[in-house]
Image (cartoon, rainbow, N blue to C red; front, side, top):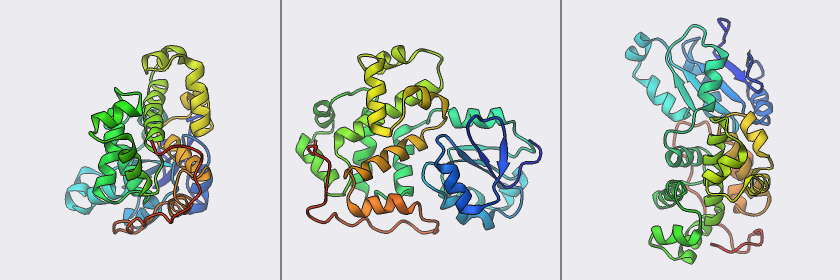
Length: 289
């Protein structure tokens, strides 16, 4: 892989990378393929020129950033700030030609902090900007490791089911039960991608009655089966597929649904304030709990 360019694409079956030559249009096509990633070799040229393109990449397209040389990082204090703004899935030190297998392994690696990574992703997508909502979603993600019901979740958060539901509803976001479902599914997806155990055993260990339940819920949430989730690496495409399905089925307010369709912002500043949903917006038939 010595011929790696500053911007390259890695996709299933993860046996090669190819240079990105078509800009955002090509990235959008890549993002439509589950488990794809943008490889950003920052030391191969002026990274400042590609920063806006990388930061504004389509949702669901993971980023693996390869840092410039240690000397460049030391001499340029903006490097790490730029990396943080672009929120990579994985970060690698300077390397002349990282192996494709190593890049795939980075993509497969489970999040070190699922709650923080998910809320960072949502902020990048412009869905939540206030501290209270970010905290609520982060707590749901954290508690999903142990809790399986909304009753237990709301009790642990010292809120009634209705109060918890209203706080998210008023921000135009999916109901708490859907957040708990996708949080548990993301944890299970990481297990699938990093274990040779059967779907049934992973499902049971994750608190599901059997593999059929997992398969059906996964199909309902993101339109994929466990075998596909195991094959297509990473977690961002899973979260993005869920957000898009929520938008299609009325689980997001119109403004939030448009934000998902529009994609991330590439500006250096923070995302704009999230407007309150208009009364009477369509929703799927589901309670706020």
